[in-house]
Image 1 (tube, rainbow, N blue to C red):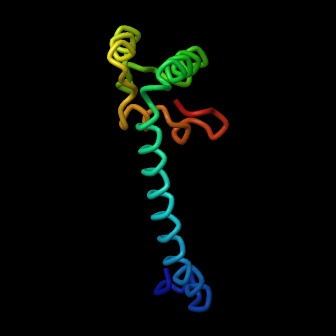
Image 2 (cartoon, rainbow, N blue to C red):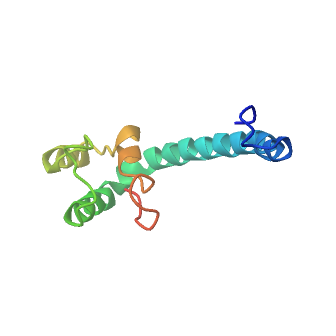
Length: 107
């Protein structure tokens, strides 16, 4: 855009100086998301009942389709409860609030 004359050199410097800051913010956000998933995975076996209720609630609200999201069905959840296993990292990521709305709690 600078070569076409649509962007003046002075205004081109502002976005260029923000690039490093934006990059650092994105990396920090990625790190925090990974950290949150690690914590959620560690706590998942003890929270399976809550996760199950939340998934059912999201399904009733039309905000989640477990089959499309590759989330366990009720039979698989019953088996996991018996084995004292919770949702996996990918499953927790699928039902995180980020892809839906920030106002919804996560699984």
